[in-house]
Image (cartoon, rainbow, N blue to C red; front, top):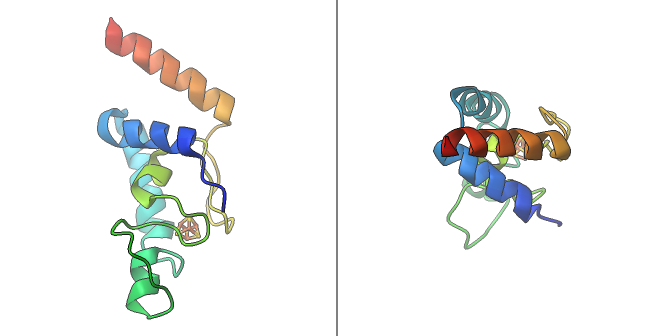
Length: 104
Ligand code: SF4
């Protein structure tokens, strides 16, 4: 299981300080796909199929925290249920533009 820590850091940033459209995209991903998914650790624990000491809701296929993963623009579902909004390079460029805008 390979976790994209750099991408998740971007998702964590976006979940706190991201633009409204990013939060809306994350909400759509969570409400439509990850929330009801059987691979969501919360659902898997409830059904007795999965055990973990991790307290956060995470994807049991990729290990990513779902709050951060859904806010990461270049992230995608490991089970092909939803796709990346942009490439990793585009996500980095968008973040740089937002950082510059925030600094002005
Ligand atoms: S990322 Fe995909 S597989 Fe993982 S919890 Fe979300 S919808 Fe399910």
